[in-house]
Image 1 (cartoon, rainbow, N blue to C red):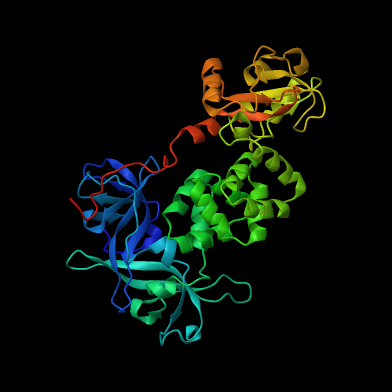
Image 2 (image 1 turned 60 degrees about the vertical axis):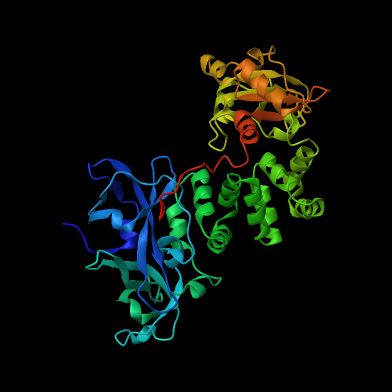
Length: 426
């Protein structure tokens, strides 16, 4: 039986189907219009995530049924334009849930005059088929180590749910962070981009350094700079330390020289030193593209040890495709570069064999001054996804991976695609 009353948190993740049962995507949020005149907020529609991870808007009037586990539309034709929030609209899960409110309900005297947090919103369909917010679930205070009790009250009993008050700083982001658990950093970055700036900064502040560093690396350059600028200077330096050195160098290269130097000075010297070396190279050269921390081994390393190194989950598939063999020291810039070993070769050799006996010495290394176009031709010529960067004295400086090349070959706005908008339009 189709529901006419539902809580928005229970909609999150539900499958969205067309009239013939075809899968369209999954619900990620509910768009509501919160007004300042105390009228019940009207539900405008749903934010639906397609299988491609794009988030689109589906008007609420397109819904014919909300059933356990699934929402059905009256049409299989929807706008594929990426969802953008309009003035006066708020996202139920991303903005309203976790916001601070007060409750004036004679049946709940313990909540009078104290701050509580929104736990959920109840929405209800009217006779005109419109959907309105009718109920609010709020979390009370924790007592004696117990979980905070949840109370459901009428919308009219809640104060603090206006665009101005929800927009005040200091709101909680627990619900958003829970939704990001288990997601790839690139997908979290895309969701951050779709949040209002205030909410985006609140989430960034709440993420730990390692997670935030991973997410920042997936943002466009200008948005990296903007997000970093909203963090305290000490926190910004900590996030830069947690980033891959090449990504940190790219970000610092976008900042004024004095500001970049101030952040470098706050970083741990062991973390800032490779970043400083990268900044000496043009960003569109092999030296500017490389990471100074590929898999580097000595000739006496066994094949078993080499395979254990490339199993490191922190390595990208491209960097794990090849190991580089050098004379000590193995920290870049290394001792004399001897050659490389492909992972396929490692897999063919007995575990006890030494990598020094299977080195590929025929692959010409990249020079740090080599421009991006030449690096691209190098990868295409040798069918590689990773290549060594060696200086004139034959020291290994780092390695360039194909993902770094693609990041610089694609247009700056590659994350945003041109689409046509049907929302409220033609």
